[in-house]
Image (cartoon, rainbow, N blue to C red; front, side, top):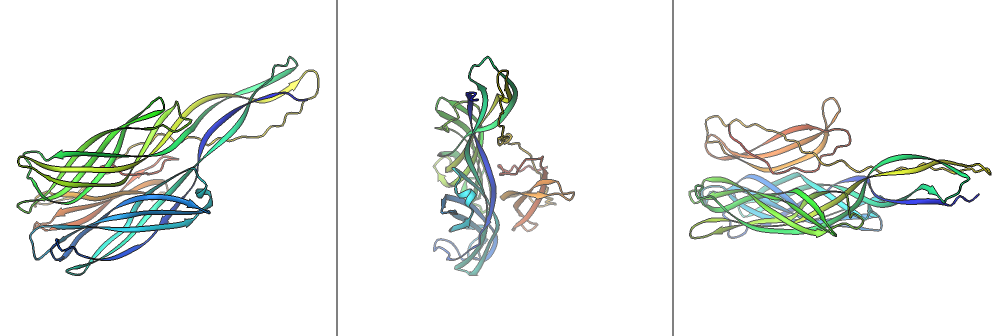
Length: 402
């Protein structure tokens, strides 16, 4: 007996198993003529700039550069010096499930960033970036929600509460601005190193567009005219309008930002000085929706025999909204001048002593020792994670003296 079943199409996105890639790069480079001779390497810190993720014939290829900033001292000059070197990389792997995904997203960190002065005019770099690649596929599932009107048919329905990812897309945007160093702080003479941290504060659907608001935090280390080290932190608000993902006309929007590349340049004026900041960002837009669906679980006819053919259907649940946790590290300065700058911060999945999942946070700190010489140290902390949570990225670090 033909019952004239009525079907409802449910479109949702599912995440395929992640892939972790590690890759080592080495480079020897000459020190530019405008830099003094290199003596002692104090710190080497890198920023990952992922330019593209491509999939061909079941293979993945990641291309980009690592901008390495080397802080060092020189016998030719007083104070800390820096130079920046771009190291290109290409990372490949075979993974067919990820290669067929409609959306690919990669989050990276540097497992190793080493610099060595071969001669006063030549430098050796050794890097090991790690990438975690996520892939998302769009699927359509059909659910039987009714039948054509027939007085002889009897139905049994059951309501299901669905929480699913209705739309996903990747967008790119840029931000630029200028910030001024306060009048009470020494004017910068040379920018040694800077870090940029994007953060999304709110996102709102406006028709077929998406309004994204947030902040870009600049953390800079500079040297003043008296050769003293100083830190400067500024926040640049941004507001961007991007295309909304197709199929996501309504729902709850979350946006994950990622730095593609960014830089800060020193600005000098007659009355003030500051920094010009520019950055390119990649945004992973996800729209989730809750929907109640009444599915037919059984039917029969009072006139003739009916044998329904049922099949279990599973829908991938949407990820919960990201949560924020804080990790603290303490550094005892004794009697010397309290000074510290966070050169790098990263997080990675780990396991606590009892086996429960956690996020391992690693912080690289530059400080001044008892002789006012620059030195570096590392601090680690663990943050507990609930079931299903994953550590994604670190925000801008905050430094406070007590």
